[in-house]
Image (cartoon, rainbow, N blue to C red; front, side, top):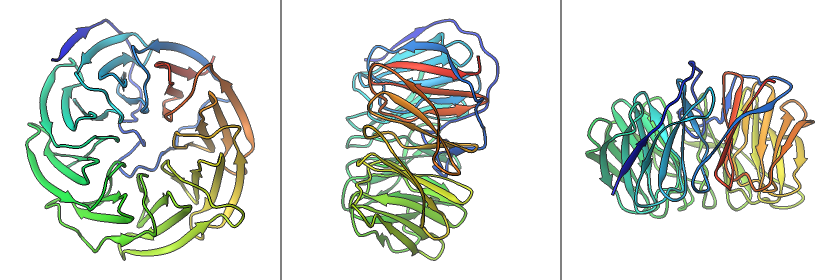
Length: 360
């Protein structure tokens, strides 16, 4: 059963962060640099915890909680515009393409929602838990499932087009470059798929271990870590590995997605390490050690790196050298990363509180 509740909101236009990793290439980065001094401008409390990043399109912020509620908020003041209740919870977050919001639930149902009104346009059952956000390309919605398949749906109707099958779970979002989409699989391969027909463009490339991370694409390179302790750079056009970084002191476990900007790649391990690597060589540039692990993927904004960790700390680091620049602490945990747009940082926590940070 679906129920829709409308509220009232006002706001002005802002830049966009329409996907959980910011853009179709899943770079987790933006050129926006936030003001040096930040304060909480507004807060909104969802009914339940929020485990995925907010997305921002136009003057609206979209979030979804673990009990199956989708919310639209005003980016200006956090006032609720509408909410849509569904029957099953969400592990992944919403993805927005213009006037369409798409989200998949724990039972494998995909919802297409009108961003203006919050009304349901279509649903599609694909089978298997959906743990990451969708992607969009040329009238298609791409969404991966833990049943091991990537599905192509019609943007307009949700009708199933093609299905690409792997041999194990897919826990990441599809990232896009050109007319191809990329998946890191629990089967230990990087899959490169032609979006037009859902066929493999090349043979799946062995990674040496499973991954649940979303590949970050920069130019002709794809970057992703594997759970077994390596960060890998791949020339996706040639389908070959360029370099592999493994910590020489202690193997790291990677459960989050990388962020990449310019000549720097940033990864966060389950061992509390934030590492910056050279894009060309994979050589370490700097390391910052967290007090507790981060289950959220890093975000690069201008010359800053933003890390949200499970001890309730939101930390701002220098992209150049890893120096700590700013920190904010809450009661609770951050389990997903921020969205950064137009001088604002928006982030949700384990208690369902969404905060907007901006200049005083």
